[in-house]
Image 1 (spheres, one colour):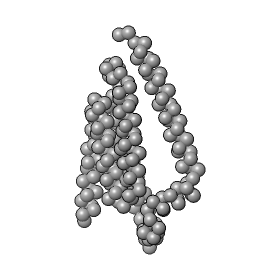
Image 2 (spheres, one colour):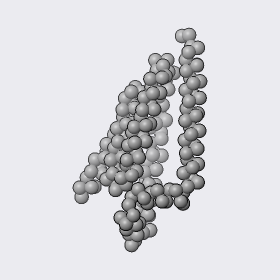
Image 3 (cartoon, rainbow, N blue to C red):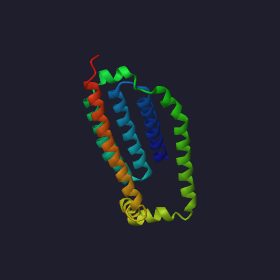
Image 4 (cartoon, rainbow, N blue to C red):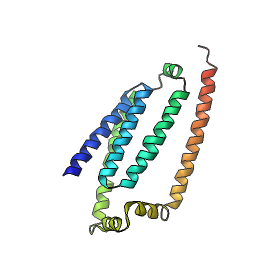
Length: 177
């Protein structure tokens, strides 16, 4: 019962923080709400018993990505970028039904995963080996190629972000208004 209450608290915190990310227009507040949402999602992972994923959520997203966003925030001249009205509230509200559908899909997949293992074989396997070892053995054996493809996609995304950032800084430097 205690885990369910803590899960509901973290879930409500995540939903409120996500709404803050979508509804605020100040980039500093958006980053703070995003950081709050990432921390609450890590809390959900810890409550669910996925300590490795929760720790990775904190290390990779809450620290590294948030710091990256802060660097972008300090590098882009926001007073000129805000004149372009680059905050898409309408699109964020229109995307909300799709987000709800994704949550419904995650619930169905989770429920089917629990039903597919009626003898609790997965739970026994995790208890016998350990959470991090299970993730590592599955990730680097069955899903190794997918793992490498995702790392290449992330690398291309970083290179693209640097190129777009460089292009935008050159655009703002040439602006005389």
